[in-house]
Length: 192
Image (cartoon, rainbow, N blue to C red; front, side, top):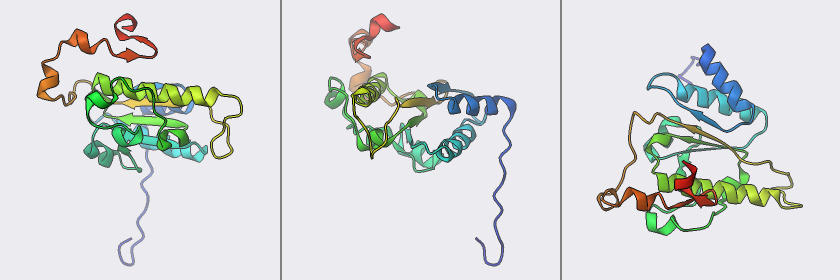
């Protein structure tokens, strides 16, 4: 607050498509939110988070880079921190799903700038979510005394803005070799 001047919170007015996106997110389904730069993806995310938290949902907000996490705000962290992943491909490409403390607490996971997420990294994220969801299916499982439903995943981004950052040595790998990464319990190549 500036001395003697109360700052008013600006009421956000969503357009029809933005409101539809918020409603879809609040329905509990997994969502891929996309649109050109400036179409209001961040506004939709922020309004959705406010509504989810009002419904007492724990929301984990992550982004593919630190800058993207800072831009979204609201306590966002990098996907590497959120999912307990290192930054070296070799360290997580064959690892089983890992249940990070962030993920264990989450009801909803939002990943911003998904277009910058490499396939191998996204595969590791999905393995972690599957491991968490499987744990939640076990009889008697609870987190802080509360039964948890499956994690809702919302990914946000535009594949036409920024591509993933790939080290030079990985750019030279055969794409077919990379596509052999296990995804959702099977060979990715057979799921595309």
